[in-house]
Image 1 (cartoon, protein in one colour):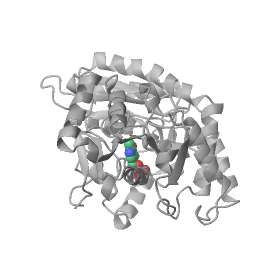
Image 2 (image 1 turned 120 degrees about the horizontal axis):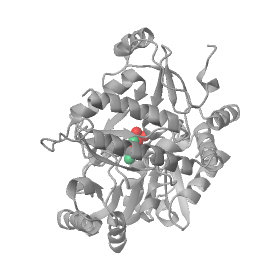
Image 3 (image 1 turned 60 degrees about the horizontal axis):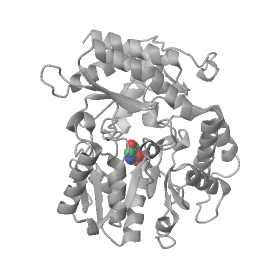
Image 4 (image 1 turned 90 degrees about the vertical axis):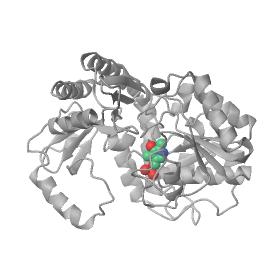
Length: 445
Ligand SMILES: *Cc1c(COP(=O)(O)O)cnc(C)c1O
């Protein structure tokens, strides 16, 4: 390879040089279907060879502008130089001991950074695990042990993972729960706040949520309320002003642990370290995962020290939790966010992309809503004639964009949302190029 991506300029454009998928991707796909479980989805038919910043190059040499960011993981950019160096350095020192057997410094450094940067001015502790779902599982375990209560409350249109408990916590039964039951019990789904859909103020929506939980579950039964401050898979739903604070206040008045699931919205994605900050709330516990490791698998539960200490020794953890190489990557990610001003870069993405999306909406009435914060933006498609969700429009734009060299994910309970969660180092030129592609796609609908 003479022209590797890490040497390409940051402003690299999309470049399509074969049909999509190209011959090498098709070859890999043939191998894949023989040995990879059909239960693993294949959103795009391409296979990645290199990636840098906001560009993924496939095995056929096609370059794509990446609006998916590995589902909000690659916030600091693909193959971020500082992360790559930290991983290589740590890999040559210690790759595994099991922290509970023999400790190592990077695990502690990650807990210090999380204590410093998660919302709330109080003593905090963390446990490190491997995935977002595992973080949510542990938050629930800790809340149950701390409160001595059993019940778990979640919101409509939420998403929390694919383990047995978290599948029960998801709003959409399909594809996460169908046929996989029995799913964990003691999980209760309450109405959320979605101003574009329900027209309710934060206070009205909070009253609806709280009334449901008080009547159907009973406040004294509930160990924790688990809430994404901005719902991810649900379609980047930003709650009405005051909604989250009202829920936090109600939790605290009733001895309920408030858990902010920031697996998708956390770690600089929205222009703050954690999206809870935009709403002025101080959660008792915060879960983080996707963006914190810069592409390495790691996740955490962080929160009030007295709650985090509820478990007896040995009750939390696992073989790989807080792996040294992944932990070193997290330290590098925090340092990159500071050094390169990535909170401001997320705000720049919003400043460039949101007006462009609003312009698209003016031109194309099938776009019913434009919303989101920072580099976590979305557009929702509705049939202007019927006012019904239009997932086929979202899908058509996604497919057109793929063939023009832009990767975009759908979201939303009805699949009628396109979400944009690119690396925050994506350039303004790349953002404009992708918007032009979407404009063409919408014009050809
Ligand atoms: C992705 C996600 C999870 C699950 O994380 P995994 O690492 O895929 O297990 C949990 N909560 C939210 C809000 C997520 O977006």
